[in-house]
Length: 366
Ligand SMILES: Nc1ncnc2c1ncn2[C@@H]1O[C@H](COP(=O)(O)OP(=O)(O)OP(=O)(O)O)[C@@H](O)[C@H]1O
Ligand SMILES: CC(=O)N[C@H]1[C@@H]2OC[C@@H](O2)[C@@H](O)[C@@H]1O[C@H](C)C(=O)O
Image (tube, rainbow, N blue to C red):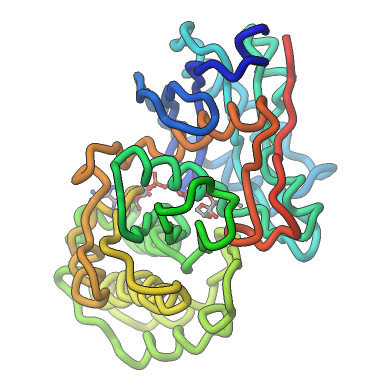
């Protein structure tokens, strides 16, 4: 406890169950809540097919509605994976987002931090998004404060952007000359649009596949301009950031490609995700020196080629600067957990539109 009060570095373990519903990522970060000192071990626990079905069935449900089966899946998978990290001094537990409506019913991440703390015999930080929403913020994205620390860690001297291509896409523009992430002008962040989630749903529905692996299907198709243009008319793209999305906010996308062949639909949906990023970039203060891509979409060469062709700067996976694109979000919640413990902010007006910088999260102590 003494060390925690002094602000000495801790080894924190972060866990993320993302919108793609593929599984739980976990990763260790050594940090004092400001600087990243070291990255540690990581692990992954995929959901089984029946577990995924239970989670999918619970999407869109709010507290008070029946989510027992999904909660059991989330708690069990996390307890199993995180027990393999006995060296963790603190745990950051994101949980599974079931619904996100910051201007309406709020934001709902399924997970019980008290129960996980008891199971692991470790202090657990969780419910990261509610406080931000209560203060008028979007509650997302939250990785930007960690992206700021990563920009410092890689020694960036010019503006740089992180792009996460998960189920949903999110972009963080960073001015690394600022000393803290909550400083005015240090960060601009927002969800860009759909990334992989609708494409996964399409190939699952039509072909029984998990995803368009390596963009193989999209590579065989052609982008249908009419569908792409209709999609880009969505008001979301013109809206000034901060702004955030729920996983299924773009049901229109599926409608627009319904009559297309499998390959053309995949190519067009990939172009929709990439073009949404390009439109998002227009909201940034200026072109970054480079866009560092994280999340599963960086493995899709068709998506990466479209981004490189459409953006005015270098586009590269985060591995190009020594980071791990499969674990960046889990690492983010390890880092944010230490910030919550130390009372440091985890979001600011530039990242979520919250009225003032706020330290979110609840702490369940053992
Ligand atoms: N080799 C690949 N080719 C094409 N797509 C891939 C490949 N590998 C992963 N993906 C895509 O990336 C997705 C997983 O990305 P990621 O793990 O970043 O998502 P997530 O963390 O669940 O989402 P979010 O960041 O929205 O919470 C997969 O569902 C798939 O669509
Ligand atoms: C509400 C919610 O869970 N949003 C996720 C989702 O997945 C990507 C994008 O939409 C981002 O806004 C966020 O996750 C990342 C980890 C974030 O908060 O930075």
